[in-house]
Length: 470
Image (tube, rainbow, N blue to C red; front, side, top):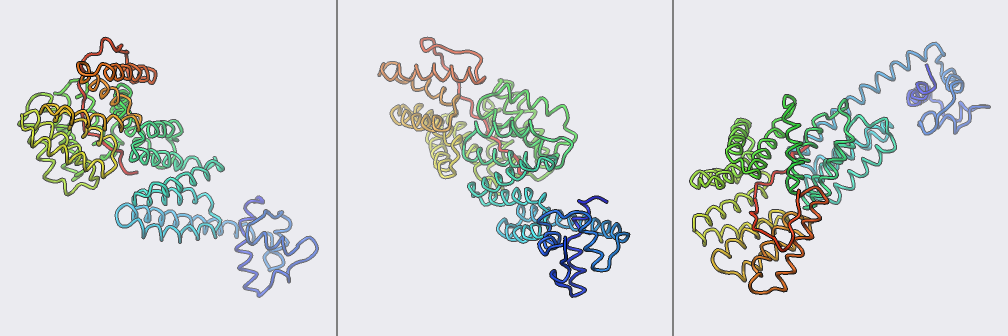
């Protein structure tokens, strides 16, 4: 029985003292000051073994009786902690499925209890859950504050690291960066989480969520080979991957196959994912997969099939939780009508997509909608209006460091100005070359095309998945 075990008996000693109607002053003597007794009871400072034994003797408990007290106290503390763990699990569930505001109120009560009982190792989890509540409320600032507070607590207690709460905070911070259209930061955060993850620790599901998020953010940044390699690694062990992540994998695999012009493979993966999503009644992932399947059919020039896909998704749009997902469907449906020559219908759909993306503050989708609208206006011989949309889209890509998308837009603008304004043509050619160099340095390109040999490229607009809830 060591000194640490004895010091855990402070609250029990206090209960015994109060039962006997003793005041602290009644027990003080030479070598046992009032402050020493108080420190033992409150746990503020460690008290030496011999003094603890003497204190128990003064309330009628012998040294031989203390080991059984220690065992009983340990049992009580373990039961207490299990109960609090269950309460935290229930609160996390309440936040996700019922009401984050009510969940936060419950969490504050548990936090007060944890602090009173000195269960400091639970505080990082409490801050983490609070962060998730504010994420659910879309209060990114407060969510980040709680995640960082959780991480600071964990950094001072490395022995708590196997909880994987630290890595969970990195995952959630990346999701916030994603919602703020900062894909570069999002990718860095999940890569940090993957490196730090304890595979033999708690919350094992977070590893797959970190990995699929890496694929999502890399794909959005056009780091497609990195995304493909990470996804290939994930396919090697799908037995323990939950359905939500698995559906992300099918959607992203289809998207990456479209980018590789392997459209039949994309159709196969999208259709398999749609079947899984239907059986699991997962409306959001089903919506994404139908949109991706429609995109694959457009590339195969099977426009009737593509229209069925987009219209199928539209039928249950009202059931999806992530409302911004509908913007991609609008863009694809607009491009489909454009390809069929229904330019006015296409323009109406794409203008709606631009408006919704701006309102939702979804920068990547806002860029895609403006770019597609520019193509639509250009096809109608409305060059000035088209250029205005391209330049608005260019501003968004520059602001959010969407380098690959910015590069594609500078190419379009360079081509437009080639015969009407050589100064602007040269300006955009130079920007195109500079962006090519930046992408090569970052691993996002395999070659650099000089301004004098710029050739036409096709902008791929795939469905942009989002990381699952943790």
